Image (cartoon, rainbow over all chains, first blue to last red; front, side, top):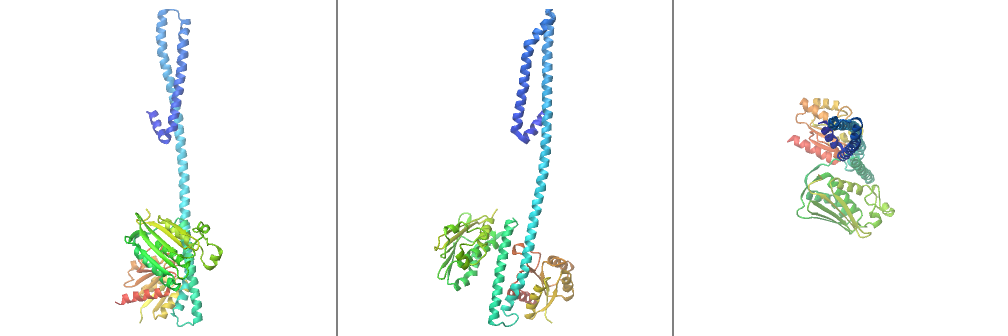
Amino acid sequence: MSLHWWRQSIDLVNGSLTKSRLISHAARIALVYLFASIIYIYFSDRLVEVFIQDPNRLTSVQTFKGLAFVAFSSLLIYVFIVRKERENERILHDLDAKVKERTTKLEEAMFLAESTSKLKSEFLANMSHELRTPLNAIIGFSEAMLSGVYGPVNERHREYLGDILTSGEHLLGLVNDILDLSKIEAGSMDLEQRVFSLKELMGSAVGMFREKAIVHNITLECHVEDGVDEIVADQRKVKQIMVNLLSNAIKFTSAGGTVRLNVRRAADTIEVSIEDNGIGISSSDMLQLFQPFHQLESPLQKKYSGAGLGLFLTKRLIELQGGGIRVESEKGGGSIFSFSIPIKGNV
Amino acid sequence: MGKKILVVEDNEINRKLFVSVLRERGHVVIEAANGREAIALIVNELPVLVLMDIVLPDMSGDEVLRTCKKKGVLGTTKVFALTASAPSDIRDAGFDGIIPKPVRVLDLLETVQEALEVHES
């Protein structure tokens, strides 16, 4: 009964090890039994014959001797098995203690990790709030004065107020990007997936750049295939991705150029491509394109400002939603940035 | 007697910004720097519109809203949240609207105008 029990419980903990232990144990018992039997059979009759000469008595002694051997060897096997059983119980007990100890340690580690990540998230939320608060005054006052809320401003003041506003907005963009990235890295960026019209979102994203395109004499085309409409994704993040990619495309395209947005539906994904015929990217730069804080070669860096966070963040935002991004480009031959995201959200 | 707008904001400079642009547009503005003052002004001055910062020194804007609702002192008063939290951190706590900071002044003035017109009709 108890033998059966420990077999089962040990088997549960470590099947193969226990089986081989059992087999070797059984083999040892059999071997000892075999050896003892041979010696006994070989020598016992001779020994008895030395002491007993009366043939009648000899027969009865020999019968008794056989019974005694069976009894004795049974006892021996029983002792062997009991000893082994105890040993196995001890092993099982040790194993149990070890499992308990490790579980406690694991629980402690998990608790620590959870509280650290919670602290990180709280710090980021707090930081975000602290950085935005002074920007509220910088952007708010310059915008209010610029739009004449406090009365007329002269041309020179207007220009400088515009500079304060643009710089404030630039700083806000950087703060938002850095905080978003930190959140993604800390694993505390939540996806708010819901159904929305991708077609409408594309329209409004392109709409944001119409004026800029006209000012820079760039043709901005938008082609959304039939069958692209509602998807499940994080609307705000998809918008952010589109704004980043479109603003890059326009930034690196010179006057007279074209930026073309294509949106089409594949089986379970939406494929978006943003094509420009701007300055393009050399193959050596392509490798570092999606690295954080990376800006392409220095002459470009002087002409086109930026912190080099945009593409890295864009890539992370796409990956977060279960998609991927790739780029085809040639120096001087324009670039195509294509990404895909699942239609039914990242599950 | 113009309709009163209550601005609840603990940061002095930001309070100055909100109050000044609203006054320039001819609104009657009263101000509070913390939750306790805000509740007292809502009870005693019956503002038509409240623009409330969420992070206040003594209690959160959410709590101020909850307290006022529980006391039943809001009546037809509309309460808008002014929040400097990242858009992804904003959770709706039952405000009539959420205005993210940094505030776009022209949008703010438009939102206020709309809220007052709704109140009038």
